[in-house]
Length: 203
Image: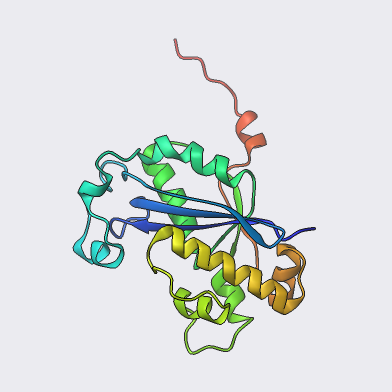
């Protein structure tokens, strides 16, 4: 099987997992990045305060997202871009937590995704003093990118996975996970389970 996946990265407005304010996505087919997208997100009400600390990190302010679509409005675009791929993120627990938190805060079902953490893969691939994204990306030959720009971070994440797969002689994500002792995890409710839910009629 080919090395196919979608790398994803979020920036948040504050410490709430529901406060996604930007996303970056990179589609990889056969170990090559073939498409990329990124956009601003207006966080759900109650999770939309922009803390100075977060803004200092990513440079996004509340005014920047004033006309951006809400999470619930842009989620279909995210799901369509991923198109059933396994998602890969650096510290995937954070990014998958953003999807879950933002969906719950918006009152919508969490989409089903299998995911793999590039941080864990990097730890089993390189010998580094730090496995933060910029350091691990440099080890993969991806340098001088705008860290904390969501799209640039997703590109760096994709580069780590592609480089690590070559290092381990892995032809797909499953072989890479086996080679590095990494575990896949899953979020959300599978589409089949959603379709099987009973329809409740309100009178």
